Image (cartoon, rainbow, N blue to C red; front, side, top):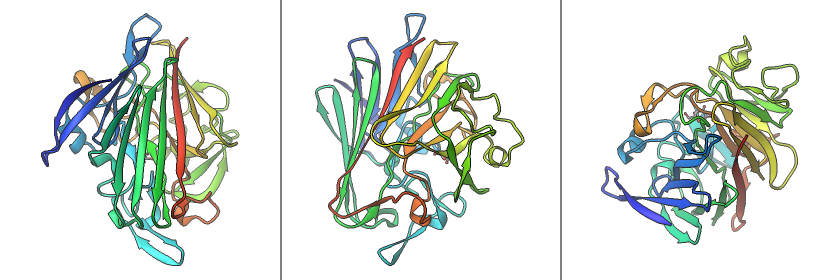
Amino acid sequence: MKQFSFGKTQGGEPVTAYCIENTNGAQAVILNYGATLQSLKVPNRAGGFTDVVLGYDTIAEYEAGDGYLGATIGRFGNRIAKGSFELNGKRYALAVNNGPNHLHGGAKGFDKYVWGAKVQANTLVLSRLSPDGEEGYPGNLQVSVEYTLENDNSLRIVYRAVCDADTVVNLTNHSYFNLNGGGTVLGHTLTLMADQFSENDENTLPTGRMLSVEGTPFDFRTEKPIGQQIHAPDTQLTRCSGYDHNFVIRGEGPRFFALLASEQSGICMETLTCRPAVQLYTANFLTPRTGKGGIAMQQQDAVCLETQGFPNAPCIPGFPSAVLAAGEEYHSETVYRFKTI
Ligand code: GAL
């Protein structure tokens, strides 16, 4: 695995980029900063390669950036109401960093730390200890994220964690996929095997109510362009400026749940996970900015498929539990597999 320097953080910590290449010449570049997927070059129909994730060229941009581009999110992905939850009869106060709520682990989430790194053949293992009380969470959490680029052009991400006290955990990756390497994704088609999604309040926080996709713009059970109904006069869409919702993935174990495709590049991405849900996010908050190689990026230039437990689960008794008991192993896997069409 090739390694190169990616500069230093403002605090002077050296950042390393790891490049995993498979037998087809596909390449994934991962930073130890934020355990971030910085670049992912996969074969396109024209016989070349397309970098299918948005990102930046410099560490300074990742440190200043607000969009979590390609980052590992923790300790808890997405929102927790008012940054407050109760566990074993005790109330915990977390950072409130998104309007009235807690988002993506707090003011300094896992995405803003330099992780330890270990190369194991074709796998990069990144790890860190999130100390007791970090951002308000209970328990010392030892966490690792493994990235492997398989020879069938699958990027496999494995998450493991163990804590010395009961805590809540919800780890995900926040890659912004664009199968054309740039420009709008409203023409990408999506199949999403989900018949229910979480209703959001005006701050994109799940209220606890589950809605059926049937007859709504949220029905992707049959392939359709992402942009086909994104501007429909549906309160759930207008209040989030697009899709930014938790969809339920039925079943258990590693299973297929979505197919994203671009006719333009001829690339499609199959996704598999063992998590109970996925956040479909159409980069609604991606304010105009410049990315890798000078590429212009703006709202709806990417789609995120953040595999996850239900956002706000620590506050909604009816949601699948997000509790990781002391000593128990948290283990989950997500696969993004690329093919040409
Ligand atoms: C998503 C979240 C969005 C937004 C985004 C980061 O996971 O659902 O509401 O916060 O991350 O900009």
